Image 1 (tube, rainbow, N blue to C red):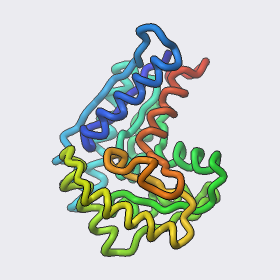
Image 2 (cartoon, one colour; image 1 turned 180 degrees about the vertical axis):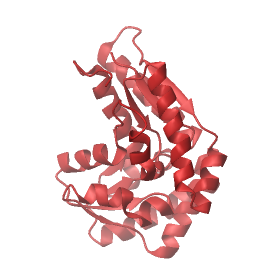
Image 3 (tube, one colour; image 1 turned 30 degrees about the vertical axis):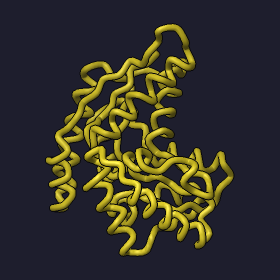
Image 4 (tube, rainbow, N blue to C red; image 1 turned 90 degrees about the vertical axis):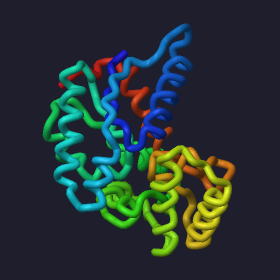
Length: 235
């Protein structure tokens, strides 16, 4: 079994989900008392979120690249960035290490393709929904991506930062997300991407009339598959 390096803390609520899912899946596949080999480097999200708001993406990239380098030195065989939004700086992170970084959008696009879906609605932070670093990566796999209208994007983003990142799960927010999902389904979305690692805490499969792609779960399962691959090693 290879060692998984996690860059977490963005937020720690979803990082805890990564840890749980990965360990449960390793035990499911290997049985006994097996658990995953994981090294976690967890950042102070306040610092990262400040960089996001102020547009200091290069600074944020430096912080996460340092995290990745420390994980590599500690013995990680590959790395996951436990957030969708900060994949905006993935190239900066990749340039700092020699080990692979498993991209969350690539794993998600593969899951969508396997479901034979061609058009999805995307929920996430404003950065993820509105900028191209994530959408384009999915669209490059022949998948059309649509997003909510502006007012809905703002409310979706507010719920993420003001509630989900604090572990607050409000039924009113679930109902709001369900209404946004319904609007995108009316626009032809055949599936919904939960493109923020906290959204899976709020929205479940039964909350949507179409397939839901929980990026936290998808990314975590991809890590398990990579960890158990024969011949996957450092460098």
